[in-house]
Length: 354
Ligand SMILES: *Cc1c(COP(=O)(O)O)cnc(C)c1O
Image (cartoon, rainbow, N blue to C red; front, top):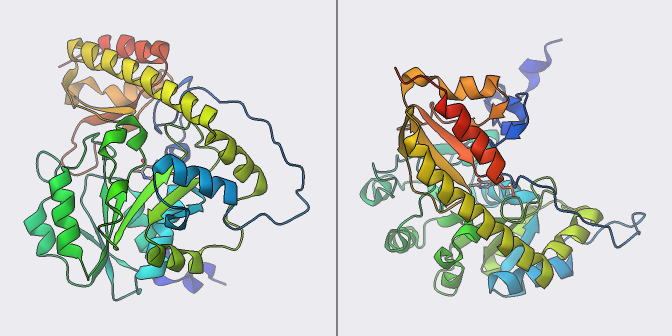
């Protein structure tokens, strides 16, 4: 019996997201998934695992709303920002009819999520400076229900121009939702568009505890939006999206002490990032280091240096971006501890350039 033949056509044809974890590798310097390099410590405070958890744990919602400067009714908590990406598609896109739109090079999960649901993926490449190509987006909005805009953008590290985001929201009004992915916003908090929710009923903001909060293994993320959107997302979410231990730890991470620790981490990583930005251009194999508002740096190396593979073989695992549109010979380096950054620089310094 051919089980494969029973599967949905779009699932048979699907290329799953190649997460850093799935790509594997062997080493002691892991700078490929934009994780925080050190493990935070937590103790579980509640012991009632015999009970089902709350669907939307009140303390987590209250604390996140206070942290983000929005109302409780404007928050949904879920299994990582990745689940929020998917909930939006499930709530708003009719398979085989509606489309999502995004602007490569950018985060890979928008496309993969749409594909699993049989929803068309329309791409409008970003301009050379990685800003939105607004006229091209305007010309491609037929049947588009959802636009994903990532700021700071993964993997390029740049913020989207706020005036462009406003124009995007204006052109989408009445037609499509605009989901601004702020997974890295803690590294440039002044750039958040959370304050715009009062102006735009179709704005959604995606957030996560995986990056600056150092909790990628927890799987906890958020969508911020007006109640009309939130209520639709709550219709399609699983009955118990967060396990009780996840809610317990998320609430601790969002206490005022937890937030202070997060801010401390952000400033340490920013110092390491500036140091890397300063020394990387001195490596002979490095052609360009792009500016970054996040916890990673995108670097273009000489083709001859074979840098990604060579560091991989030495146990320094980075993220190859060579296959992304306009990112030939580019590597994304997560900012780690200072000694991990030093290891990267030492290894790059040993590579040939031609
Ligand atoms: C890491 C990342 C996510 C996913 O975050 P999770 O909460 O871990 O699912 C979403 N968007 C972007 C741009 C990311 O880099």
